[in-house]
Picture 1 (tube, rainbow, N blue to C red):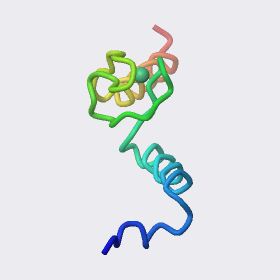
Picture 2: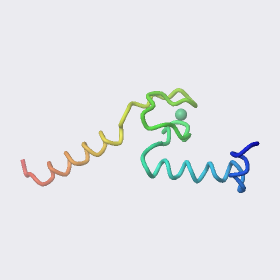
Picture 3: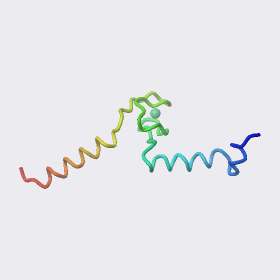
Picture 4: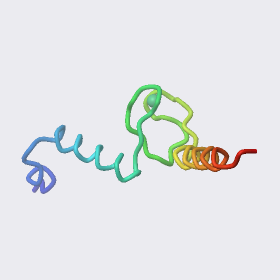
Length: 76
Ligand SMILES: [Zn+2]
C-alpha cells in the first residue's frame, strides 16, 4: 500500500542526510552561504532565507582561479 515507507527501513532523516551529501558531492545541490541549508544548484534565490544565489557560482570561481594561476605564470 505504501511502497515508499517499506523501502526506507533506516528512517527518513538519516537517509535524507546521506542523499543530501551525495547531491553536494555530485554538484546537484549546494549550501546557502547565509543559512547553510541545501538548495538546488540552479536556484537563484535560497528557498529558506531568500539569499540571492546566482546560477553557477562554482564555475565562476573556477574560472577566476584559473585566470589567477595563468597570471601568476606570466611575469607581466
Ligand atoms: Zn539561505
